[in-house]
Image (cartoon, rainbow, N blue to C red; front, side, top):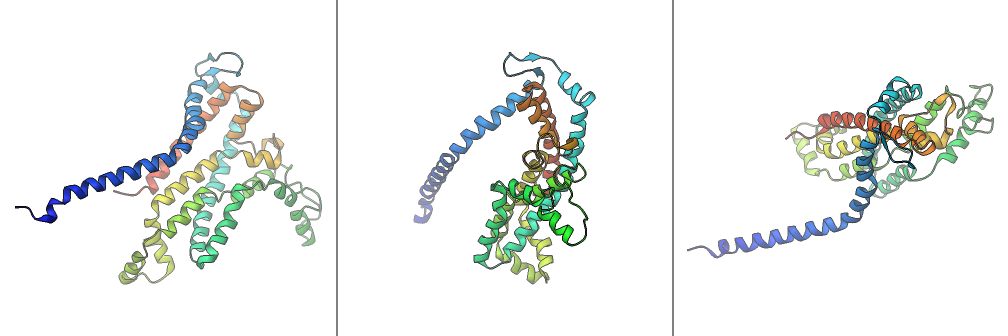
Length: 308
C-alpha cells in the first residue's frame, strides 16, 4: 500500500511541468517582438548578402552572377581594401582587448562601491554608448588654438602650434581609437556588471576558509571562474564592435578620411554599398569580414567557454 505522500508526487510533477510550460510561453511572448525584428532586419539580410556577394548587383538591374570575381578584385586589385584590412586589424587589436579589460575593471571597481553609487557610476559610464558625442569630441580635438587639447598642450609648452588632430593622417587613427574606447562601454559592460552582482556570496566565504586572503586572489580564483558566461558575452560584443567600427570614423574625421587613415573594412563596405550602390561588391566585403569575425569568435569561445 502506497503512502499518502507518494500518491501525491505524480500530481505535483504535473503541476510543476504545467508551471514551467506556462513560464516558457510567457518568456517567448516577451521575446517575440525582438525576435521578429531581429529575423527581418538582421538574419534575413545576412543570409541574402552571402549569395549576392557572387553577383554584380546595382539595386536597379537584376543581379548578374559573376562567380569569384568580386573576391578576386578585393584581394588582387583593390588597394584601398588591403589598406582597410590593416587599419581594421590595428583598430581591433588596440580597441578590442583594451576595451574589454576596461569594461571588466570598471565593472569590478563599481561593484565595490556603496549601493547608491553603483547605479550612478554605471549610468555615467554607459551613457556615452547611447549618446551622439561626436560634436563634443570635434570640439576637444579642434585643429585651431581654441581646441581643448591644443589649448592645454600649448599652455603647458608641449606644443608650439596647433595640431590638426582630425585631418592629419598621423593622428587620425589614434583619435578615432580613443573615442571608440570612450563609447565602447555598452552591452558588454552591463553584462559584466550583472555578472558581478549575481555571484553567490557564499563562494567568497568558502574561499576565505580555504586560504584566500585578499581581493586579487578572490578575483582570480572565484570571480573570474564564476563569471565566464558574462565574460564570453562581453568578449563577443567587443569583438563585433572592434571589427565593425565605422560610424565613429565617418562622423568624427569625415568620409573619406585623409589618406584613408580611418578607412576600415566596414567603411569600405559602406562606400561601395551606400555611396556607389555596388551591392554585389559590398556584400563580398561583408562576407569576408563575417568569416574573419566568426573565426575570432570561435577562438574566444574556446578560451572562455565553461568546461563541462
